[in-house]
Structure formats: structure tokens, C-alpha cells
Image (tube, rainbow over all chains, first blue to last red; front, side, top):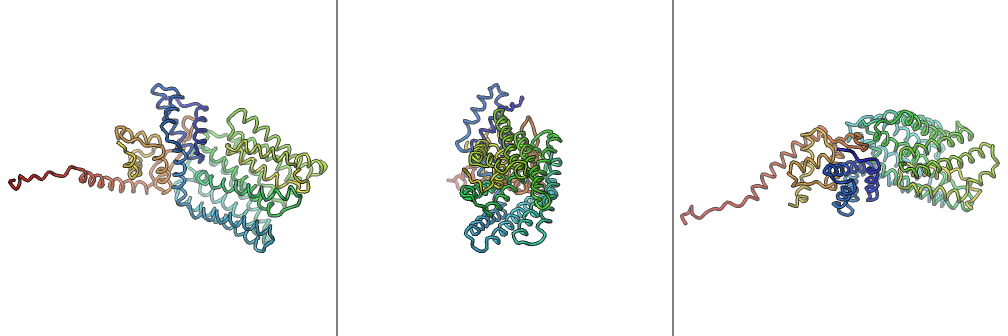
Length: 396
Length: 118
């Protein structure tokens, strides 16, 4: 029985996504099931189009969406503890931001409370995952990454409380995350039954919801400071959290790609490690000067953009747009880095930091909204752009 | 026969039994096996099968392994030791229940009045 070709598989995947099946593991499974059904009909002499029509005709309206809803409901029942901690962290994060804006007391404590809630959500989700899936391999890698993220959150807490040790904690977090992620890019290659990608896959909808809501809120919070031209501490803190979570999630999505690929190349894993390291190192603000951080950031955009294109963009026209977007983003970041390093006059910032470039970046993220790799890349891009935006320039 | 309403309560047991006999199976394979064993009387829809598979996996009764076949990811399910034990219990319970059902559904014995000589 001949298998379906790439275009036919993509057509089925697109159909499933359009019908509301966005949860990747379930989408993969349904893609295989529907493909087997179609291949059976083809074996009986039907064409692909006729078989495809027959299958879709048999599906009641909204069934695909219902399958996803029922499946997610089934899975979420056992994860309510981490879900409630995630809600609590959201509430505290935004309540803290509002308190800070209104200059009410207790904003710092709320922010710290939200970090603790994020930590508890991660710990409870991971612990549940490890207990329920003892057969899956590589739990130590999950623990290593979890320790890195917790150290990162602890360093922010120490910084807000002005406690000594924040720098040391952040350094340990960066080292732990660089090492554990880099190992994962090699260790998780192939088709083995590992805990980390499995757990990450099932939490992906919740993680992405968290990141997108955070991004939308911080975007709105950042706008007054850019349009009216003043610096705003709250939105900067939230932007750091958005960049860190979106960047770590962007690299984590590759685990699913590494697992699905028959023979992912060593060079690709090396590229992922390089991308993660140049993404994480600028967090060591106390050890690296602005020049070094600028170089690292400029290196990150083309490598990560190429990885996002390689992993998620199949269509030739979209590939050209994603590569052009990557080049544009690298150019924008290079101007910022060269101005910061003193190679360009400060006025050069005006070429790349304005409402038109921001609108172009937003348009690109809308264009790639269906592509989970590139849209996460664009989210990191826009968050970082807003973070380094010289507020005194204004938007227009 | 409208089998879907009868299937709902027994699908979990059917899947556990099939996996107990076949070591590892993927979604399409399970639906084909059910169709084959029921002489096409029972056809599992996508909507009936996948929520149950994920539920069983979530409860730690199944473990899954993914392999790439013909350019697409295929997820093979197998029973965990806990799943093996539950499969035995559930199959036995369902067998007892179907026996009970049979007794209920059999036509009532025709107690003839002849025995009293009427």
C-alpha cells in the first residue's frame, strides 16, 4: 500500500488545524489515522481526492473540534493543581502591575508571589508527570531544566527584594539552562519514549496561552510609555518575563521536531544549542558589557530565524518570506547593537525604532500566526524590540 | 444496529482487552480490529476512540511510543503493568454483565398451565 505524499499529508494536517485540532500530539495521531483510512480506500481503487471527500463527508460538523475538546478535558482533570497555580500567578502578575502603576504598596510582594505561583505550577505539573509516567525515560533532564527555571525565578525575586546573591543565582540559572537544553538537543533525537518532550507537548497549549496573554497585556502596557515618551519599569519587568518564557518555549518546541524526525542531523542540534546559548548569555548583564550582549543578540536572530524556518515552514513562498523577515530582523537588531556600541550615531536608532517597523513586525507575526515555530520566534522578536526601544524617540 | 450508545460504556474494556492480546497497537489498528472482530457491526469513530485512549494514558494504564512511518508520526499504545491487571478485572466484569444481560433479554420462559393439567 503506497503512502501519501508530502503535499497530501500537509493538506490533511491543514484541514485538521482549520477544523480546530491544534493540539499537536492529537493532530499527529489523527493525521496518521485519517491517512490510513484514505490509503485503504486508495487500495480499493479510489483516487486520493475521492477518498478524501468520502472521509470528510462522514465526519459530522464540528466533530474534529469536539474530539480535541473532549481529549483536553480528559487530560486536564488530573492537572488541576498546576492549572490553579498558573491562574494565581497570572492574577498576581497583573494585580502587581496595576498596583505598581497606581503606586500602591505591595506591588513587589505580588510580583514575587506570582513567581512563587509559577514555580509551584511547574513543580506540581512536573511531579505529576514523573509519577504518572514512570516508564518514560529522561526524567533527570526534566529535573535539570526545572532547576534552571526555578533558579531564574529566584534571581528575579532576590533582585526585587534587593537581597545579595541575585547575580550568582542568575549565573547558575543560565549555566543550568544552557547545559540542560544543549544536552536535550542531542539526547532527545530519534523516536525514543522520553518524558520531557511528552510533558512539554501536553502542556504546550497552556504554556502558549500564558505567553500570548502575557504578551498582549505587556504590549498594551508598553504603548503609553512609547507614544508619550517615558520609561516604565513595570512593562520592562514583564517584557523580560515574556522574552525569557517565549525564548525557552521556542527552543523547547524543537523537542517535538527532534522526536518526529527520522534522522535529525547533528548540525541541526548544534545550531539549536548555539541559538539557546546566545539567547541565554545576554542575561548575564553583570559579566558582559553592552557590546558583547549586542553581538550575542545579533547572532541569535539569524540562527533562530533559520531554525524556525527549517522546522516549520514547508511552503516555498512562505519560506522566502520567513528568510527575508529573518534578514530584516537581524538588520534592525544590528543597527541597535552598533548604536549601543558607539559605532553609529544615536540618531541612527530613529531608522529602526519607529511605528512603521513595529507595524511591519506585527504584520509578520499575524502572517505566521498558524506556524507555531515562527510565531513564537516573532513573539520573542517583538518583545525584545519593545524592550530595547529607546522610549525618548516616541512611536511616530 | 446503533452500536454507539452501547459502545460508550464498554470501549475502555474493549481497548484494554485488545492491547492485552496484541502487546502494542495504534489508533487505526484498534479501530480496524474492532471492526473485524465485530464483523463490521461496530465501527469506532475518531471521536469515540481518541478521548478514551488519552484518558487511559493519563490514568497510567497505557504507555505510548511514537515512531515515524511513511513520513508521519504513529503512536503505538501498550499496557502498563497496572493496565494489564485492570484489563483482566474489566474483561471479567464485562463478561459477567453480558451474561446477566442475556438472562434479562432472553424471552421469559413460557410456563404452560399444562403442568397443572389445564
